[in-house]
Length: 91
Image (tube, rainbow, N blue to C red; front, side, top):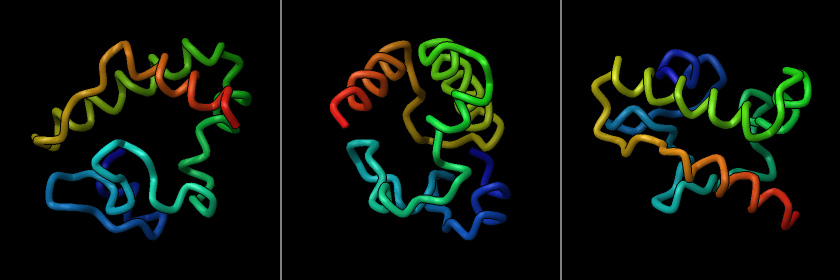
């Protein structure tokens, strides 16, 4: 997510360009109270895409934003979507 979008949603940005609430294991420290911009499941349902399609699309967009920001943060790969879908099915 671009730094500007994080700031517009009252989220602080780390020096690497990632959200301050993103932990080293890619989990969110404010998950239960995260803003709507971060509620990917709601956004996915509105998109009309399958979960897998939506997460693959968002991962590619995130990678582009990180490239544009020259972020050192690790890029998301195809396993990202599988991990997110698996973790959501546990809820």
